Image (cartoon, rainbow, N blue to C red):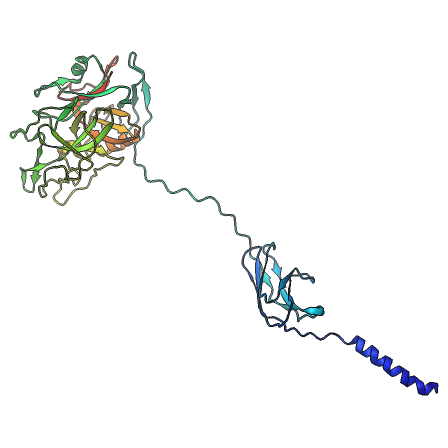
Length: 443
């Protein structure tokens, strides 16, 4: 009996044990196309194709056995961050469902994070524009009795390796008057005599170029000096200038716009080009009549040619040239046309004035962006100072921070008189009588 009963009792027990040990069957399909891609030194993105149906979500793994994140159903991507640069990782993904049902875990190919990129530095400073200004070491000149509103400076620094001696005076037209002097009626007088005859004069330099009469004109307290053209004088005076044409020098008259420096009634300085169609009428422009010797004769200046007239009325001014700086730029260069004439000698000055190979005593006047006026002279053609050419003068005035500058008469006419100091520069050749002067005066 016992032996007969044993099999009967044991069978149900065995069946029960067998059923309890059977594992759960996974019903979720594993993800496919699992790819890991490093997107930075500390980030990797893991992508896969979702093949499961009815899943609750996805587990994602890094090197560790435990999942690092649980994602919602239908997810197909995850970004790991905070990783170590230059480190190899294996990332995986697995679907999960109810009652702990899992898909097979699928691991992507190992991926190595790249090196960390250096932190970007500040944006590099833009390359500065080429600065062709000539700058000297200037020494202040003390003059007893001269108002502190006027400063005088001197230099003996070499210019392009040559001996050089120069001076300049600077003042604000709000503090002193800027005026032009002219003896009148074609008469001439030295700078010293013109200064001594005016008790308010503080600093005076020579002004415009002249022949038997001033070339161009001047404006004194709003009144234009006599305007006339002398046919017998090849330095022809205001309206036009004898311009050479090929094989026939001085055959044709060209209208020219004269460089002008001055201040208006409020003391605002300016450098322009000017044209006088008739006595008492003065047009000022921001560009010259584009006259070139030997080429077609241009139109005379008008209210619209070569451009609209500028909104500035000269009160004390003089004409000369060439213009050295206008709006901070030099309008002249050393280029010539095929006939050998200077392309930018718009005012048709003779070579000994305009020529870039002409070193001479020079005089110039200019103004800074703040509205201060600078009177400049340099000695030339002596051992102690060889002088400068027009292009160097432009660079020198730019080095003095001028934004507008005009070349004045030079050579033996160059001079500066200062109250309390007298005549500053070399007097080789004497103290030449000149027609016009410009300077600083007490108000």
